[in-house]
Length: 231
Image 1 (cartoon, rainbow, N blue to C red):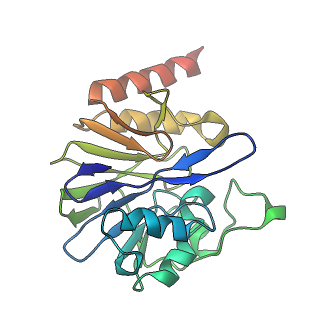
Image 2 (tube, helix red, strand yellow):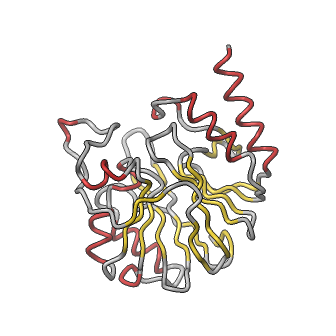
């Protein structure tokens, strides 16, 4: 699915005993080559290559990988992607970098199960850092709460928000992050409020996919989350 010029929604499906799950990373065309936003769980590099190929993008040509955050469903195949691609630069928010490069253990992983392979981080991002893309500027928006160093990405010229896990789509509606996987719901609620300040027409979520939604609808999610916390 094309989200904007040169911005492609990918689908990585897995079968689980409790039901199939689909992750939705994104590929972004840039003047220096394709950029990949998130990588899926360990073992999904081949599926990711197939999803990219459906949009005419070769995994070997990926020049950069940007993680919205360090959770295993986003960073799990990072090592395999780095090995398969043309030595892509790895971009992560500075607060997430220690979990990706191995200095710290991923906060939602079970130590008894181990962790996904650690990967060196080339660039540690901060709020407001902007990438040049074929769809116009792609600006990083610091949205902690669901995970340390969580980032969403806004394309102001396209009215597009890549929300990562700061938002989800559930039964076709935009909702907040999954509370059971969000260590700091108060901070996550404030982050949704930040996203509500952006001018958007389309929101793409790693969990649930894409919906037509304006800043008013994002603000309604923030208000609902805040009301739940007051109750």
